[in-house]
Image (cartoon, rainbow, N blue to C red; front, side, top):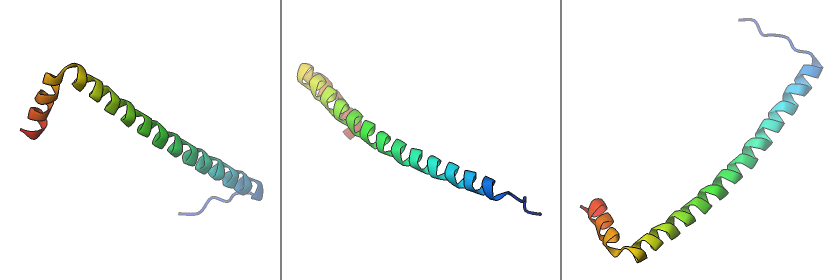
Length: 67
């Protein structure tokens, strides 16, 4: 299959586009890590609140997961 020819300007634009996509991906990965961490913390806090308010739920969860 023959290769499509591109102009030098198109090559520069393509390189710029790839850099922008790469930068956005790095930024978004950081945001995902941060939000995932925050979500895990909130989930743990909520679980602790439920266990404190309703100890019987804690035992039911243990039974479910530990058999």
